[in-house]
Length: 168
Image 1: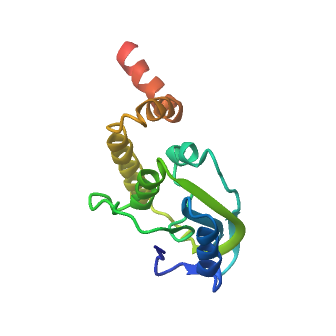
Image 2: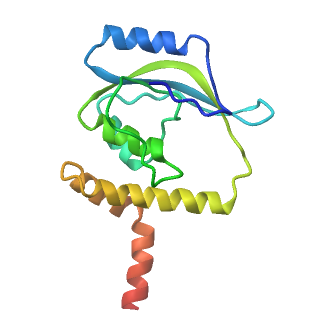
């Protein structure tokens, strides 16, 4: 399965390289690649060239670092959540790789076109969807303890503000 947003790009040999990887490594469910982030004028803003192997689930639970079109996955029964309008790919990655192996090709094979003028409503919507996903993941007993400690670490500033309001 290859996802591709209409404003992003994949290199001509991306799918070929990833299919080759999956055919050689049958035990892998997914393989992703490096990503270049560019602005509307074609200027490179940043790149993601870091592949996680054994700790990919831990890294994904911290936040979505995989561009939607960087992976190539095998067919599966998990679908995007219809209740999310942002980060549905993040939830999809987590639910799919909990017990599966993920590979990485250390080469930039796709491009994300970034809109640098992100509006406040967009950020708030992302945060709301992140909370929805964490709430859903907390129902999964195999992830509960990891999510619990992650949320404490990730939102410790907000927790301390809430505790100050309650107790001061």
